[in-house]
Amino acid sequence: MKLSKISVNVPRKPSKADKSALERILKTLLDTQKAIGAALDEIKASEPLVPATVDKIQKQRKITDRSRAAELKDLEKSAKRGELHTNPAKLERLIKDLNADIAKINDIEGSVHNDRDLYFGQELDAIADEIERNLPKGVSGARIGLPGLIQRFTRKNSKAGWKNFSKERKALIEACRDLGAEEDRKNGISALASDREMLKLKYKTRHKIVEAGLKDKKKTPAAVRKELEDAFAEQDKPSKARWAGFLQLGAGGSYTLQQSGAFRGAKIHLTMSKDSWTSAADGGVSIKDNSVQQIFEKLLKQSGANGWKELHATLEVRLPCGKNPHVFLFAGVPPRNQAWTELESQTGWSAKLAADAQAAMRGELDKLATALKKKIKEAKDQHGAPV
Picture (cartoon, rainbow, N blue to C red):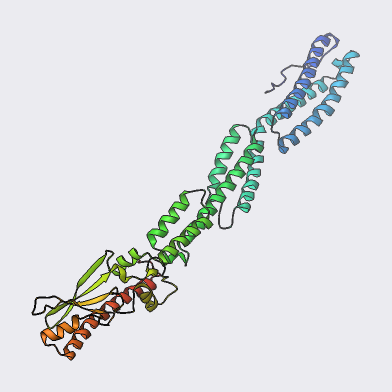
């Protein structure tokens, strides 16, 4: 409550005849003293009370309870003796002092809010430092928006008179702790996107896993790393279908490749059967753990003329009798059948001519093998990413 100053006039040259007027002035002073004490009690009862305000109250309380109380007691004694009129200067001085006290009380009351803002502002500086210190390594207060959080915290609590400071302080620290943990989680996941080992993974696959991990607050960096490692393991050991697509070997039952060369006008084509793959070709051949030659040998059967299943070359010749014997060459080895014999007997080809035809076919197979190995090397050079 705001106190009003004493407004009374002490007679210039009082006499006994002014007794009643002087006693009324004394009563006003006594009432003012009580009002000052009540005002101090009211300010002290306001919460929260900060040290600066407490210090001001205590200093004024000493003046009120000691100096002013002693002077008023002397005046009360003078009144009982009928001597109030003998010392008007004392009355005037006490009026002046009490009015000064009233001004101080009003100043104290008016500064309560500012004292709180100043005090809790300093507390917030300490809280901000504490929050910064306890954030995970690599996470800054700016990164979690701490300055803005402190500003909003200050506006809200200043408006409420800082009455819930302890509760709000705890909530702020907990919120910053959670924000710091989330930022640390995101930092850990984001770092995986540029991790040297993870760069071997296809960009789209890596990006998709990392972005999903960032969005899912339950995903830890360790869990995302495991997903990336699993994806890389799958990439490093491609399925047969992925190998077929990458090496352009087809994925059907029996797949005829494009025409590849000719001999004496007869076209040569290369044929890839589904049985030309090894059993390991479907997810069992590691790109990073094998050389180019090893990968080539582990993907495609290499034995030659064994079960008619290997990648092979075919010479498209037509015999005089109308038959098309499809003379084959498996991994550079003629099959164990009568096709080449029939070709030689019905066309008059010499053994050398047949050998030259086989050499031409072998050359086309070698070209294909070279092209396949080049693609496999590309996969190795890029850590399997293109496959």
